[in-house]
Image (tube, rainbow, N blue to C red; front, side, top):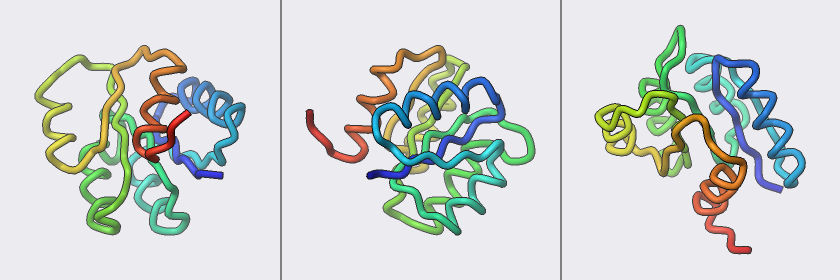
Length: 121
């Protein structure tokens, strides 16, 4: 059962994603900001990370670089509420595997996870 870490400063988003992922058989970890995400990744090494870009304490793009420094094979999917191509492009250049623009549909999340884990259904 793959483990997914949800990183978002919005409790609503974390709850929504947690419920969706649990229903589809994923184990779920949560972090409320980039700083917590890096520490949780260091301790737990989840299979995939769903991480918001704009967060307090540590921006998602900074946390992405730190996670990739810990594990060059880390699978990180960035979440953004801002439809700003420059931010998404920088995240992809820093090693993000994919990105989702909020608001997203459940199937978009599940497809991105399957793609990151290379699971076919």
